[in-house]
Image (tube, rainbow, N blue to C red; front, side, top):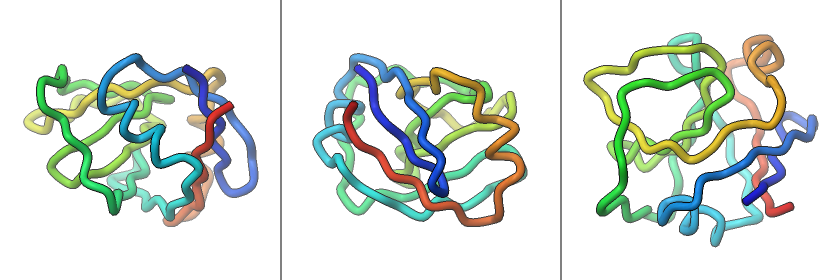
Length: 118
């Protein structure tokens, strides 16, 4: 599944996984959130709608250009650097179709991000 992701007015596409968490997030589309920079390697935003992560596969590694879900904060996270996030665990949602890491690393502390189906 493809989604359009507009970051501060710049349009990108991402290929999303086929899993229950992605299905729930896609049902929220279109939506717009303010994402906050965290620890110099990611942006995150908490969702108002609680996402059910029952039975989801977890990972402790995140790579640049990946989109993940952190259930501890009910938040979507976009990484622009490769990091090991141990002891935290996230659910892989998808990956940008192009490299957005340099673009994201140059943005301010808060960015506006819109999600919509292609």
